[in-house]
Image (cartoon, rainbow, N blue to C red; front, side):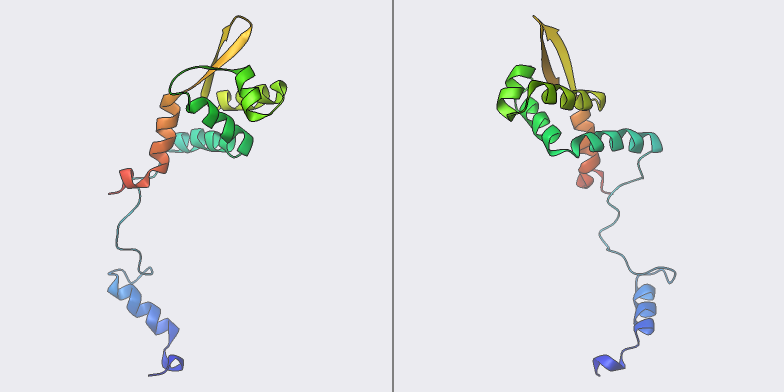
Length: 134
């Protein structure tokens, strides 16, 4: 048999029948990645978090705060470590705070930032499809 002898429509029909459902093409047999779809509210909340993280500067700032193992970090240190102007650091931290990823606390005229562990756990759970696999 030559490749030219294969009818693509017939091949697709046979493939679908072998999958046990003649109405759709055969899918990966490993099963779904999630037990159920996320809710509209969760999708909306996570979209805001992902939007905040879509900027490489904010992603780096989050990592600078997160690597402090639960300790707070001063905005001045973040400016020094990131090489950004203090005003730019504050603007990016405000976006991260709005997304619920960091929190700030005023001390002696400075703001000290810490990661919101619950938000990171929720984000990790949404990305960790193997933990959600059926």
